[in-house]
Length: 237
Length: 279
Image (cartoon, rainbow over all chains, first blue to last red; front, side):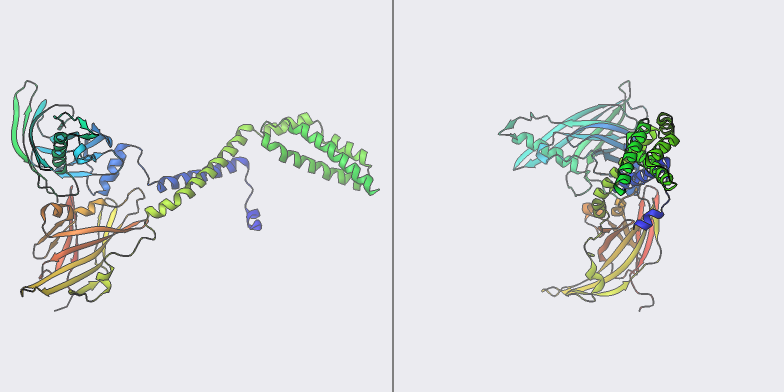
C-alpha cells in the first residue's frame, strides 16, 4: 500500500488545490444526484415533472397564491387540449385535466381533512379575449351524519391572469367551534366543499355533481358569455 | 570521545534549529514553518557531517555551516516569497471542503440505495409467469421479450414478459364462466439522472385487434370499464419495472396494443396474445 502510494507523483501546492477542487466538484455532483437532483427553480421542477408525466411542454400561464395550509403557490399551465395544476408542496403532484370545451372549471387540491376544509380554489379557464371579470354560481349539497346541507354561492373574480379566472369559495357558515370541534353546520359545509374538490382528485371516483352557471363580462359590464353546466368528475384518457 | 561528539552534535543541532527558526519566522503561513524548518536543519546537519568527515573540529564545522547558510533574514524573505499565505490557506480550505463533501456523500449513500430500490422484494406477479396451472385457470401463452419499443421524453419502454391465463369455472347454478387475463412486465429505461419514475404510465391504455379498448387505470377508477392496470414493482438506477395487467381480455383477441395518446404523443407497442403458428 505504501509503495503504491509513494509511486504517485508529488504535486505542487497549486496542483493539490486543483486536485481537491476537482474531487470536491465531483463529490458535490454526486451529492446533488443522491439528493434526487432537485431543481433550482419552480419552472425547472415543473418541466421535469411534466416529462415524467409524458406531457408538455405546456404554456405556463401563472403561478398563483393559494390559501392552503399545505402549500401557498399553484402553478397553472395550459397544454392545448388540457389544463395542468401543479401545487408547490414538494410532493410532485401533477393534475392534468382534459378541457371540457371552451369553458373548463377545475379545483385546486387540498389535503385538509374533509370536515375542516375552509375554502376551495376554483379556476375557470376560458378563451374570451375581452373578459374583464366573471361570476360563478354554484349550488352545493351534502349529507353528513344524517344532516342535510344545501347552499347556493355566487362567486366573483376580476381578471388577474390571461386565460383563466380564480374564484375563492369560502365558508358562509360561521366556523365557530364547540369543545374544539367545528359546529355540525360548519362541518357539513366543509364536507360539501370536500365533495366538490374531490371531483378533480387524481385518485378516486366521485358520483358527486354540482350545478353551476358561469357568466363572463367585459370592462363595460357587457355579458360576453353565459353557460350553465353541471360540475362532475371529468374522465381522462 | 563518543560522548563529546554527541554533545557537539546536539549543540550544533540547537544552533541549526535556532538559525532555521529565525529564517522560518518570515513565513506568514504558519502551518508551513515546521516542515521547512525540519528540512533546513536536515540540510545543515548533512553539511556538518560532511565537514566533520573532512577533519574539521565540531565547533569550526558548526560555524562553517551557519556561515555557509548566510543571513537568516535574507533566506527567510526568500522563503516567505515562495510560501504565500493565500495559497496555503486555499490548500487547507480545499482539503476541508473535499473531506466535508466525502462525508456528506457517504452519509447520503444509504438513502440512494433506498431510492434506487436496490434489494426490493420479489416480483408481485411472479407466480403468473412461473406456474402452469392454478386452481381456477391455466397459462396458455408465455413469452420472454416482446419485439419493439416505445420512446418518449427520455424514457424507453419495453415489454419484458407476457403471460396469458385462461380461467374457467362453473357456478353452483350451472353457469359456465370463462375469461382471459394478461400479465406483463413493462420495463422503462432512462439514462437521464434528473428523471424519476414515469408517472405518465398510468395513462397507458390498451386496444386489441377486435377494437376493444382497455382504458387507463386512472380513467377506469371513474368509469368501471375494462382497464389496463399498472403498478410500480421495482426501481433500478436507470430502470423502472411495472407490473401491468388486464383482468378481463376478450376471448378472441390475438394481440393487444399498449398505447399512449396524450399531449401530442402517439406511442404504441403490440403484445401478442397467442403463440405464433399455434392453432
